[in-house]
View 1: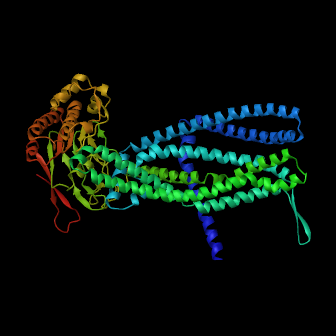
View 2: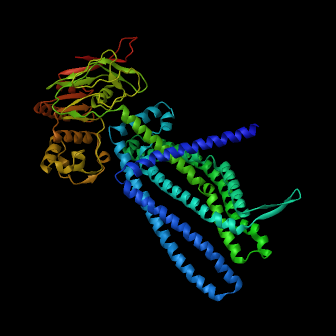
View 3: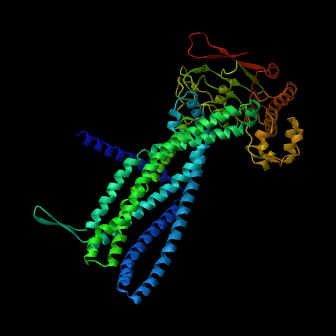
Length: 630
């Protein structure tokens, strides 16, 4: 009874998993074939692929009938029929080749167009509303806490999801779907042929003669069913191992990229040995999981190879007694063998594609979780975009939390007016950069304080939150003044020409060469004025100080009204810092805006009228700091 219950529970569980997999595939496939701008072309390509697969099955039926005539002619030594059938075969083979070529071409074209659309769609979602930043933030939180929940939730390695998993999903979905269709149509086409050719199997049971009609059909069904059950039992762990393998491979590749990105810092720290050990550890995870997967695949290949080889002679053994008795001729025996092979292969589609199905399931789960995470992030964050005509920064009292639930600031009102210059100060790690992220509108753990329901013109009301959960709103928390520009601690420069790095994210041709050169000169980078068209990896080529000066040149080029600078001159000497801050302050005043900075050096304070100082909150307070205005 217990064994029966266990089998029943296993069957129900696998059925539920199969339904869940199909729902996931449907959710990922529906947008392209039903909602996309390319839907009619996609449907046309799919219809063509289906038609060519049906045509291929029809040709296989004709070739099966040709087998009977051809081998009968050989047995009867009929040269006229033999040569005629060779001509028939030439025609069938030509049609077969044409259908095979165009079936392959159109199938690949469908996969390519689907992949192109999905990639474009995922890139748009990933790069909209700071989704890429929010996912990376969640990933850092998960890795920092030592929890695997974040990875399980689907935020690890979005680059792999978009580049590799989309390609594998489209290829597997098209290939497996058309393969299942081909197997189904082949089964329906050949099962009648095999039923008619196989005759009945007679035996005595209890003194009465019993005849089983279509005996070969039942043997093919039993053979395939037994093979599928055994194959599933052997390879049932492949899906989870494939999922883990993709994650370990992506983690290893990501760490290799980090070594390449921080090569100079690692070399100066003499950290090559440490990085080698870390890479070996990650690669060890790759190898360990792959060996577990390989052992499962080895057992499965043992079975699958034996299963396939036995299928070659099995129909001959079953039908041999009728052939040797003279009931059927050689041509009919070959036709039975061919039809049995088609039926058995169709019924064995599951076992033949088991490894691919396992990989497809893992890929589908990764894409579904990635898609769900992007959707969840887009619901919790709203972009902070500069508002036309707005030239003041006011907020309602804000509650700013850390990701793990700690309250950084509570009931804090911020105000910056035209002509103001504000310096944010405090000990390292207190949350100054977090406050800057709040102002930029990219920090999801901030909300209007629970103690008030007021709203001012520059901020939208939000549901009060005093925990580390992302805010649930599609409305921006901060309305930035028109002409705002942020300078992060680590500026980003795209790979390419210097003019691209300087104008980013604007198009390079938006600024004249004279304006670009003047900005470089004003930012104390005269040596780069002749290298506007030089292409390089500027983040690696330039020193930290040069990168900050290039970021300053970008600001001087675009001449914003409002500048928010997060330790934008920390790598510069004091003389260069003084010159650049003088230009920065003159710029915002000339434009009728304001300057908000984070800095540790005392000399920077001279360029600011007001200071926001992070002061430890009184003991017993729910918040960590109080923002004092001086």
